[in-house]
Length: 358
Ligand code: M6R
Image 1 (cartoon, rainbow, N blue to C red):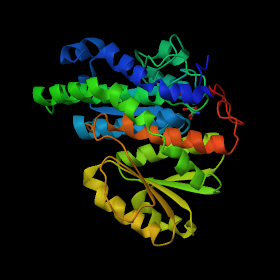
Image 2: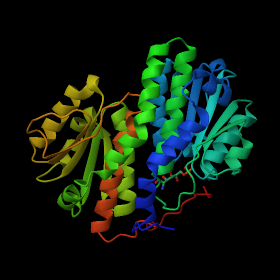
Image 3: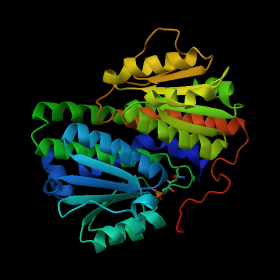
């Protein structure tokens, strides 16, 4: 049932407050003991390979950033269709994490089987209970997102992000990189998360922004670090449901070619939530603004300036949780753009919810 929403996608976007509460609450009661009890012993691995497709791959990229930064652990993240055929440099201390909403994606399943054949431990982060990937992996962490109908994933994506946040918290604590004081602060933020998600969902400014960009042929997303990973998801969401050509670039790469595509009014959506990289990203936005791009600045810190045409400010929360909030305006903006274009939002052309063929 759509429960009064025009589309399942919109309904699922609006379920994210409850989903995140469920996902986190299932594994974490605020104590590190609960994580130790509910997660497998991840401390025995010194390297992690994250393998997935599409949006699940994008959550892996966010997971890589979080685990590398907070848990000081090397993480490789690759799309399953490449990983399954290439030489792997893993060893007995490598954990291969497979991420999949459906648990049936052919390439991800093949990557799982390859790792198993090589005797490598596998952990599945999956939504559908009893699915092939969940059954065949050594360990499974269900994301508890509930049934997702819309082809474009939203609530499963953020639930996967939440699992990666928990893995980073767990590893960071076990490696003595996170103190009890840090943990208390994170727990406080986790408790506030559903309200912050709600507040982010209530913002309606996205319709006005969508009206400015929905007729364009090309839309670019840029960001650095974790914001680049979020840009990739924002871009995929937009293109899969609105059929507008969209690409995500590491902001610093633009000047190496892509900037030649910027012309009067080309939309460039820049994501910037990482304080350490903000000035660098702003200088890249200025480069496209100087070439008359329309710029939308998505940030967690308001800046009064003329380098952007529009600004979306999300709440600033702990870095481990920030991506869950930052992606929401991008989901809603894609939805509004697709709606203005009269697209079949829940069932975009040429796409299936579960890709069970290679
Ligand atoms: O079921 P999975 O998570 O394994 O699916 C992977 C991709 O096919 C999926 O994320 C796809 O990219 C979505 N349509 C994105 O919204």
